[in-house]
Image 1: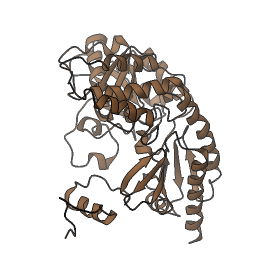
Image 2 (image 1 turned 90 degrees about the horizontal axis):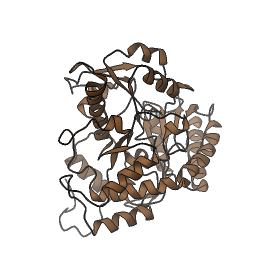
Image 3 (image 1 turned 45 degrees about the vertical axis):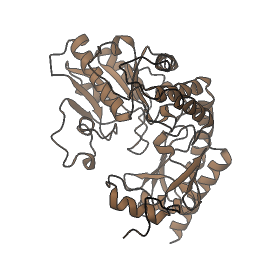
Length: 415
């Protein structure tokens, strides 16, 4: 039984209180670490008991610019006092600026604003299909999109329809047709999968949820060349990899590749509000007409104000340079752990996938041990853990976090 009154309670809820409330009332679609955040600033989080943690997940890159970033908080507060929602039934004074400056940031023409990353992926799929029928001339209802195995683009029905993760699919069928899976990084398999009905290739430049999987050198360039040759759109899902995470505005820039559409989310909302977008060239994005797609909250004034502040921050280039510089240091230190409880390290910029020796521990066990030492990280796929601290993290704090990982591995090896 709950041992406190929720209404009119006179004391702060403790960690056990919160976990008990969630156990009773919250749908269990997540299995979080038992940390109850109460406040956060920069790269640090404090729980309800006041314990301090270094955030090395940054909400899957949604908090790239740090918790309570003062520039972004100011933008949000200013807009809160003016207007927060109009719907797209009317114009408002922030949306045009946001769209233009975001398009300019990526050397594109047009922006389709949405809220969540999954919504943006669904929107890109609709744009690609409409382009296929209206521009390429694919027969009605025959369009196909090629995707990569082990992808993660969200959890809506259409998106899990082309997932290879059984836990995302089991008991959720029937699924949406029109997708073909190929091995990530295999350009020959991709070429064989493209047919006259193929309208797009949808890829993550780096597969995040799969364990920060980087493709073979030259793969993205080869994809771009192949899609141009076959008159097929290239769609880059940069929801996790984009907006400074990999030392560039988007990972495609590191590879000198320009797709037909970018999908953005997470960090676009500055860790304050859900903001996502599809950004592309006018000859692709222009296939949508009024009434054919929309979102009540997509491009709302508050989201546009925060998103605009994010875009202007990135336009300066400081965040990208910082991520590149600290990322080199991060990977240099992590690679020294290979053979000391670590099998492999992957990633770019301030983003790393670390394969823990499964004989030593699972990824979850390592993350629990890190939590006890004041570091927050997240496991994926058995014995892989991910590190993605906010870009504003200091070198000193980053080193301290890596020190804790070293300590955890040493203690586990000694058992």
